[in-house]
Structure formats: C-alpha cells, structure tokens
Length: 386
Image (cartoon, rainbow, N blue to C red; front, side, top):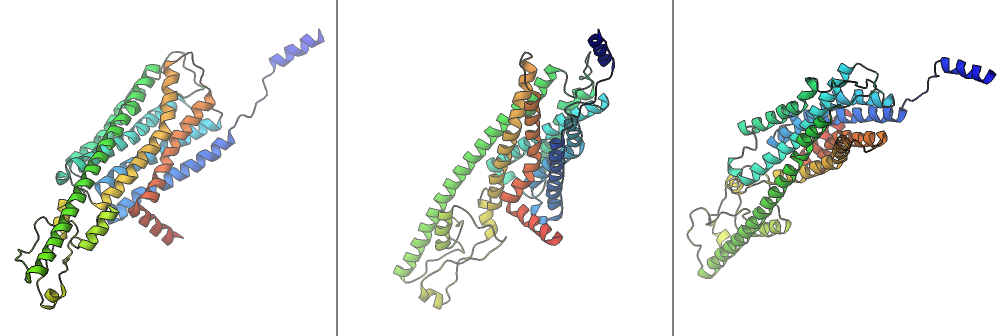
C-alpha cells in the first residue's frame, strides 16, 4: 500500500527539468556565423573597392556571396538556436515559417547563382566576340534577376501557408508538406545541378578546342618568322613588308612563342605593346625598320584571356564544393519525404544540414586560394589592418 501511495505522489509531481542544451552546436554555430559573415563581406567589399575586380564574373560571385551573407544573418542564428535547444522549437510558428521561407529561398538562390555563372561562362566561350567582359549588359542583368526571382518563386508556397497543416507539432520547425519537399528539392537542386555539369563540360571542351587552335597558329607563326629570317639572310635584302606579317602572331618573338607554347598560356600585360622581330645583325646595324604589332589586335583574336582562364579554374572548385556539401542534404531530405516508413535519425538530418551550411563559409576561402586578384586584395586588407 505504501509503495502504491508513493508512486501516486510521484506521478502527480511535475517532472524535473532535464538539461538538453547542445553547447557544441552553439559554439560551432557561432563560429560558422562569424566565418560566413566575415568572408562574404570581404568578397563584396573587394569587388566594390578594387577596380581590377569589377568584372562580369565577379558580379555573379558577389550575388552568390550576398545570398550566403543573408543566410548567415537571417537563417543561421535561428537554426543554431533550435540546435542549442536540442532540436526543440520554442518560438512562434510564424517565425518558423519565415525561417523556412528564407532557408529555401537563399539555398536556392545560391545554387541558381552558380548555375547563372556557368551559363555566363558558356556564353563567353561559345561567342566570345559578342561577350562583354567589363560591363554588365542586359543578358547578364536578366540572369542575375532570374536567379533571385526563381528562388523566391520556389520558396513562395511557404509564405502562402503550405506549412499550416492539421495537427501540426509546434515543438518542431520543418517543412510539413512532403509533396512540397520533393518539389522544392527538384527545383532547387536536382534540375540545376545536371545543367551546371553539362555546361561546364561544354565549357572545357570549348577551351580544349581553343587551346589546340591557338597552338596550331603559334606553330605556323613560328615557321613564318623563321622563313622570313632565312629569306632575308640568303637573299641579302629584307623582303618588302607592309608593316606586319600575314597572320599576326599571338606572341611576336619566336623565342617567346616557343616558351609560351611550352607553358600553354598567353601574356596578359598591357593594352598596347610594341614588339620587334629580330633580324640578322647587318640589318639591325643598317637601321632596318622593325615590324610592330598592336597588342590589342592580338587580344581580339584570342577568344579567352589568361585572367578568364584563371576564373575558369576557380569556378569548378566552387561548384564541386557546393555539390559535396549539399548533395547529402537533398538526398536525405527527399528520402525522408518519399519514404514515410524510413526511420532517418535526427542526428543524420542535423549533420547533413550543418554540412550544407558549411558551404557558405568555404566559398570565400576558395576565392582566396585560387583567384589571384582576390588574394591580392585580401592580403592588402590584412596588412593594413594588422
């Protein structure tokens, strides 16, 4: 009887509060927010302040950095708060719906910005003569606007109340409609990513063809210079010239041409450089006119300059990191919506979500490591500050 009475008392008393705060998630989340904010602010400021960085590609990178910055300001603090509470949502459900809207929109904007960059680069390789490298034209404005408008369109059902389902659990903040989960995942990830991969495949095929054509022209230019020199030595007189050699050389000096051919790159210095073809000493002593070349004409003949090829190397790294960070999330997220009988642990869902957010901190690091112009600006900023 005594035992039954004590059990009754214990059942009537409120349960003792159990500490379920996730302090590691709080510390990691704060560090992630600081890293994402600082890195992407630096990217935006560098393009705004540095004239050499005001290029078309970098405007798309600024749009990507801006979406990551908004993610750090509007989404990550609330996500860190929920993780610190052990995954239990204690705030208003209106705030939850706002969080879900911004999360879907900004993650979608990030991948759409990467897709827009690949489209822009594909156009630059396919029709380089009609591509504006220095100023944003209408086509690029349309691409930039479309990324944000489409991202807003994907996230808009949450704004219009698709999360307001019957018997909604107010202790958990998530997307409630499984059909919308599949729809948003397909629109945000599973359609744009294959498009990006195909575009980059086409870009690198175009670059390979361009390199082969350039090398062939370099070889023919080398032979033209050598024949000109041999004919001038044997004939004893310099052949008549019209100020240039047929088929202007990408690099005028044969020695520089051969070095350039070995290194598979072009010099990207100066708008106009007067360069000379060496002739035998007797002709130089008699002050024979030298052949001069306009570097601007050389650049017009080239489809892509070396600065753009440097950008081409960094962008696939950005895309690769994005796919590595976000693919697990979208696969697990979609699987949980499609397979209602599957038991996906909360710890796995939390891990893949963190991995996706880490991508927002990786992009500025990638720019620093692989892009010379960004690296120079960051070094200059750190030297002035420190």
